[in-house]
Image 1 (cartoon, one colour):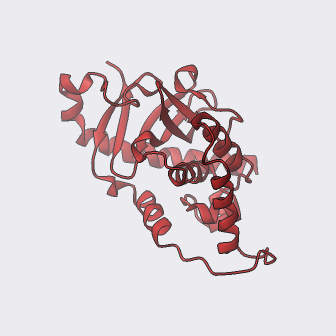
Image 2 (cartoon, rainbow, N blue to C red):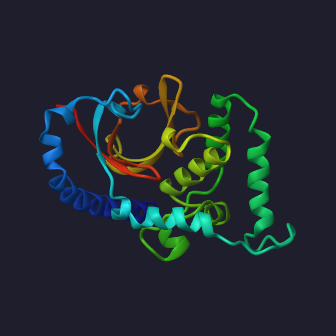
Image 3 (cartoon, rainbow, N blue to C red):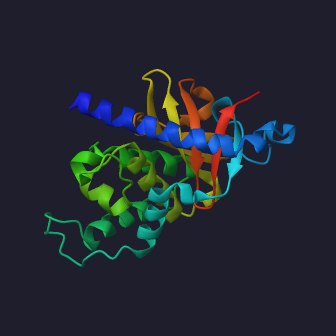
Length: 233
């Protein structure tokens, strides 16, 4: 099981790096511009993990992310009884929303912790086991039913915070390279106050990104656009 998981993750890394190699060539003119090498002081994510960000606007290069956004808007779950545990239905979705409503009036830092813990309690399951595919980005309904892998934890946390009224501009799905494990990973970065906090399925607590030294960001993405993250020059 562990070896299968490592193979799956390494395969994803090769695919990500192959895609980004092309994207970096397309973006080379922007990176070469000295104005673009200046940290964007207007963006709380401009110095994420000590890297500079280079804005990109065509999120169609991430079709799985577009599928998540569309499916989340159009998902139509079957009505059902809570006694029906064999399938996920609108009753189960109501349980998720009820939990979010129970923390809506709490301080924002408490909300972050609660959302992180709620998602992290779900089972880690490889996409190949859930969907017969090497890489599949699941909407929250599927994750709450089946469990999922790192990006699925990020997605349910992101939509949980959106339900609580957090701004889209304050959140990013970030794909990083874990320099300790030498593996790719996905986390949620959330800007709150003067810090950017990291919600991670591999950590039980949330911490400011400035305290983390083993993540190198590759790219981040929101509803509207995405960003390359490159070493500061």
